[in-house]
Length: 123
Image (cartoon, rainbow, N blue to C red):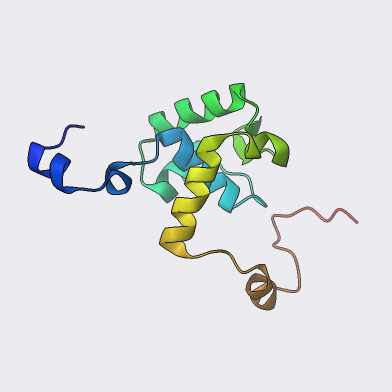
């Protein structure tokens, strides 16, 4: 998408820099690393076209940054692999800036005591 010259000259580089579709997808999956999603669910959550998300997921899979099983996608649990991907860092920083950093203790305080019915009991 193009921008006018006035916007180009009067907007900071940070404001002009947008995350790529793969970065947005990976950022969403990383923020929800305890779940797996269908491509259409990801697209709906981040406000992108399902086709673009599907293409991004395939590219991320080729780089071993996401895992795919049946119709579900999840971020890899290989933290070294994620740390080596510079888009992950940018996506995390952007989501933290927009939404605030995650407070896991706060999540635990509000988490249900019983697992969701869709989660298989591993015990």
